[in-house]
Image (tube, rainbow, N blue to C red):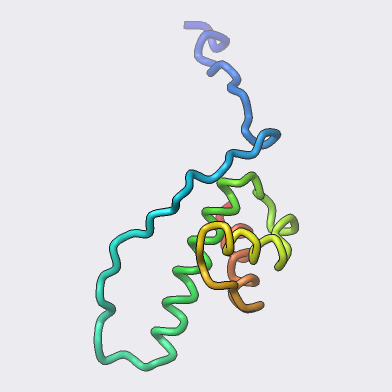
Length: 102
């Protein structure tokens, strides 16, 4: 079979057309965290979960690069999906997740 026949057909990119979030956002059912850990572990764990939720929401809205995700953009996305406004540390974590996922 010729190599040209194996090439996939190009598809339309959604990068030029951001996809709107499906609202209302339904959070996943919460499970209890494991007991007996230091308080700092719970704070970091919840911060990571929040950063991951925000990174996914930003990707869904068409923000693909960390330099596009300023603190204001991240905080407005948090308001859109119904999450408390993130701190500067959480915003930094969101950008780090977007950077290292590439």
